[in-house]
Image (cartoon, rainbow, N blue to C red; front, side):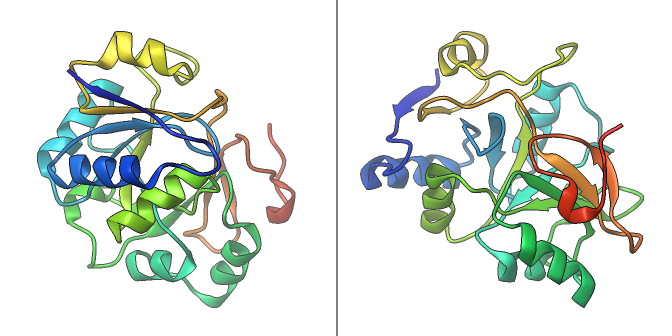
Length: 210
């Protein structure tokens, strides 16, 4: 049965942040609010948690996971970033964007796209997530909490508890979390390419939603 934490959305309680980090270090899977939609989050070192996320989401090994990082320097540890990419990232992070980039050898191969060797990376703009990343002192591997055959991610923590309480170790509630996922931008081919229009403004990339 999942634990359920109610955190202050602007000033999350340090005690609960520490407890959430311990749950994740023990291999726990967490449902947490972000600056876009709710996400499933775990640490990168546990292969079994990846399988659990794929099962909940109903996705295969070609699904792009997202590595949530504290800042740009952390992104540069886990992805190959050239000067032009870095300038774009600096102008748009933190924020509701996921960037597809080529992963580095710092990441386990199992978390990368099997053919492209890419991964999604982002720096979220949410006090609870930022506090948890700081406490963990490492990135979180995440995926939007979108269940199979549904059009929108789950947004209500009570509904998440009803539907997933036996599939995750922790559910975090921290005020309203909207249904719109991040904008996904592929930066691997030079010019930014739109993969998914979401909450993040596309204007900085010279892109428009279809």
